[in-house]
Image (cartoon, rainbow, N blue to C red; front, side, top):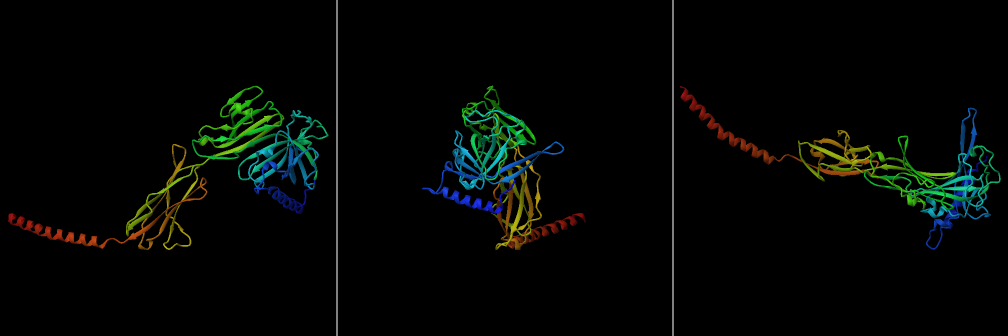
Length: 435
């Protein structure tokens, strides 16, 4: 199998970008994605073989291909590459696309029915149809959609597993396909706080009247899977909750989760099975709470020379556990780089009842007069934050008030002058009585 050269690859993407730019031109300067005629869509081919030990080995080969929308008999727009021609059906993946073409990442793969040989219930389908999946991701996280493409070949299967006898796809081949089923999520990943009730989106559609379908939701966490919901239209049996059963008939398999807690984190898997197809999307859910940061002084701290002060920076209510708290000092006049304070002590992580954590960073400040005007900053970084949180104060250092010392000295002299005569007089009287 010959992989196209790098030069041809560059020409393809350059020409492809030009075509896409031309397609985008219109009255408003933008294009409806429903009118896209083609997309660059690499084909991840497979070479499968059984080794000497009897184990199946798979080698993946990246090949350049085009996803083209049109009708049976259309010629390839880019004949130098493999063309997957998606003909009109009741399922059109383009209606679900959002954003612009440059935010779409497309990939085509082979699909194995796992030995489940059956005819797809549409006109022209055959028992030996070949299946592919086309997955389009929005790079900005708006959606992920997987479309099952059915391709009819002239050669029926020979009784082996389909992946052991993949239909050969040559460079420059045009494969006429039909979109049979799509599975879509508009929540490819979810990040929420505690005690939220997120909706995980899962939509599907088929190219004919909805046949017997099975919908399942599972949670994978720490290597274990647990079933959250299942529904079979064949039996009408429902297990679990969170999905509106009536909505499934319209292709809506979204689930609403109960209030999130620590154990809610994991990968949620929406599966839609319409034999012989089984489409699914993995939706990772993470819990994130931003820390509340405070310091125990105001924007300005006034201190007298010789005194010391306990400075505390608190980061409270954050999740997950890892957080970093640092104290910095910046000289007056603005030094090029604030210096990191080394004499900082950290408390242990405190676990709160709501599942969040708290931490304190403490240091004792005993400044000199040269520290007056310095800026002290507590910097807190956490994975929930796009940028660290800063809390600062300015230090003012003053000498002790000399007037107070004078007052104290005079007071002591007055007391001494008053008390000493009385003390001496008392001793003199006592001696007279004694003699």
